[in-house]
Image (cartoon, rainbow, N blue to C red; front, top):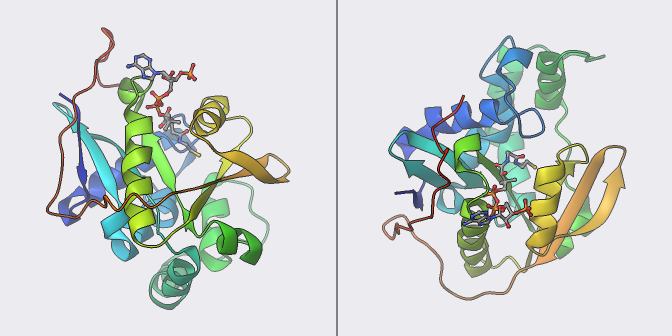
Amino acid sequence: MIRIRSFRDGDLDALYDVCLRTGDAGEDARAMFLDPHLLGHVYAGPYARFSPATAFVVEDGAGIGGYIVGPADTVAFEDALERDWWPALRLKYADSPAPRTADERMRRHVHHPRRARPEIAGAFPAHLHVNLLPSLRGQGVGRRLLDVWCETVAALGAGGAHLEVGTRNARAVRFYRANGFREIARAGEVLTLARPIRDSSRAWTTDRAKVFSFRRRPSSGRAP
Ligand SMILES: CC(C)(COP(=O)(O)OP(=O)(O)OC[C@H]1O[C@@H](n2cnc3c(N)ncnc32)[C@H](O)[C@@H]1OP(=O)(O)O)[C@@H](O)C(=O)NCCC(=O)NCCS
């Protein structure tokens, strides 16, 4: 049985772990980083801390194997991080003016996080990250996570959502396009995709976890 439920505080380590194992354009990034927490400090931790109501995890018999995170209001989220998240990390991690390694790129990000362009955050205020370990892919789990997240951010007032994805992550680009996202900007190898969301007023709340079952592919042992 594969189950989607709301994020809980005790899931944080699993979020960081999935983030790292899917952090190289969808593939395992563990070999790229000397510090295994850096990627999660940028792409997992702040979402759990500042927008827990819009964070959902997927679990099966092997534990948590995926998640979707992302705030309904990107501008407010970025403001909160500037105030209460980045300062402590900036004390811990030195800036890297000319980053070459994965660690250096994340350290650079900690000191100089890019903010969403105002016209994008205005038209598509929510943004998201969705990551599944290989054993959970290709069975409709990502689509279901996206549905749950969209319902939730819509109920919180977001009329649209955006995300960034690398062009070399072909599977993810195909997934987003199949789920209604369209390209609205491109900078080098990074696409910004966006879509409107309708408010169905069926938000999930922390006490309203729900169980879905998915048809599993035969070879679905947890990897790697
Ligand atoms: C991108 C990602 C979230 C997509 O999630 P997913 O659960 O694999 O997506 P879905 O299963 O909904 O759809 C993927 C494919 O499975 C197919 N599928 C859906 N339900 C299915 C089922 N029950 N049985 C078999 N195939 C199914 C879909 O038709 C789709 O096919 P396609 O790839 O040929 O278009 C996931 O692959 C992932 O986490 N990748 C690694 C991390 C990553 O890259 N994240 C994005 C960073 S920007």
